[in-house]
Image: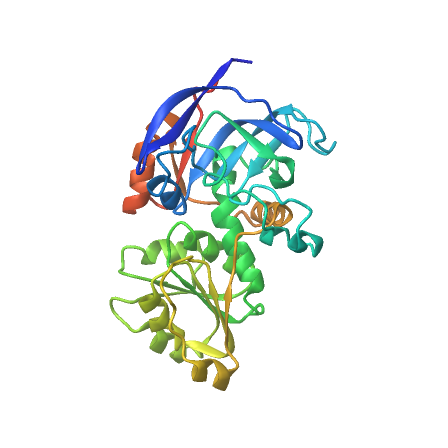
Length: 342
């Protein structure tokens, strides 16, 4: 094993720098992963642009990580072995001690790291991870395809499971991008009548090919009115955090319908209490999910053939890949590969 590894760290907010670091030893309950691929997620923006410049060593972002275990720390359960293919998502491993963990709500653990934010992530050839955050990767998925499923896939898969709709019901996917393009595939495979809501005709063909039965272009028609003509949506799953855009579609929610929010914006979401009460409608926030739920998402992807549409670039071009993600100049996910890994 080499003594050092390459990593892209946030030296100053908004920029990534290639560095060589000593290979770390995993601590108790941790493993060392040789990274094979790491997806670039929209949530990386806050980690890269809002990084603390005083942090030493500087943080390595990335939380859609796939690789192989190369070293085990003390106390790691026997289910994890050297050479095993594993992944790590945004949630870096629950503590098994807090009240949420005692209730089995591992995704809500108060003492787990956020990968790429409060601990180093996968824009690197090596990464240390808690064993409680590890996800087993099916053999049928290559590393590049599996990586975005660990965040974008998991988030949308879980949101659809929580949305309250049943097979045959009309549901709407608001925002057809890195998250939405996975939601369309999963929703179609789950048996929903799928409406994609986007801006402009440039995405219409892709949305229909990915699984939408109907595409609503908000540049040409009012989304809420269009949903009402279709009988109303039993669920609207929003990938975006723009309150105005969400509110513009909300009136298309059917009685007892549910708005599921994935976009973690800071601005308040105005919702009329009367609209909720009179139609027994509800609003639900949905986080990504636990490692077990992540494995279910991966297995569902294998069973149904759902895959992220990706473009890959090598680790040393992480700045370019990140800027393309930020500009929206990608269909639909950027993935870093460690093709020079030692």
